[in-house]
Amino acid sequence: MTGLELSKAYYEAFGRSMIHNQFPEYEKYAAVGLIGEGSECLGFDDEVSEDHDFGPGFCIWLPEEIYKVVGTQMQKAYENLPKTFENKYRMETFEGKGRVGVFSINEFYKKYTGCSGTPQNNVEWMLIPETSLCTAVNGKVFEDPLGQFSVIRNELLNFYPKDIFLKKIVARMAVMSQAGQYNYGRCMKRGEFAAAYLACSEFIKAAVSAVYLLNRKYMPFYKWMFRGMINLENLRDVKEMSEQLILIPDVPENTLKKLELIEDICIKIREELNRQEIVRGTDNFLQNHCYEVMNSISDAKIRSLPVIYDCR
Image 1: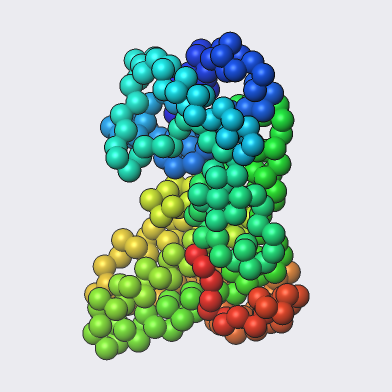
Image 2: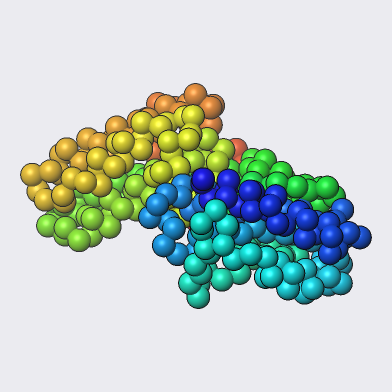
């Protein structure tokens, strides 16, 4: 079983009857599933994952007013469920406690996005890191009779508002051109190999984020951002190109090869930007497209931000 399958089976074996028998008047309010931190929520768990913060468990989400009335009692009932299921025992580290159990809907979303529901304006959207949004909408909902939890989830899954999407794309193009197309070669020419390594790293992080953005998907935590690229429709070949770039040592004899790979990735991104009609020009130096995109942003507050600014 995957972690998600284990979670659903555990809920169906013990959780559903616990809610129905012990809290029948609140059953209609309880959304159930597994979402949040942990590789199993992304569907990326394997045998290695099982050594910590893995095992039978699920989340119950209640509206705030219902949570205040019954949340503590329901959490106690949850904690009394069998600890072992399908020969799996949930091993929790100190940092991994509180990933499953009973939650207020508002507080659950606020933990990851800073908002108790859907962000209400562009500034709120801008301040939420992509990886936090990924954590807030991964996994699966097994039951949601009231629908309140899923309304927020679906609004977040609809992705960024257009102006925030465009601003993030601008920031990625700016970093890719600055760190990769410009500074990497200069650092290598000066013999600043540690700085070149960091420039390459910044380029790759920006490029991978751009790939997720252009697929209208939130990028996962760095540990899983490459793994997640196999599920994307557009620009999947950037995954292999980026991995190749990472594995080439930053030594003088490799400079040209790495610069060519950087340029090839930028060309791929620029071509996708053209295809999606985000930019019109065909210049491969991505910095030269930034102000064209900035000028297409409607919100004056967002348009007035520095080109390179973004809360990642």
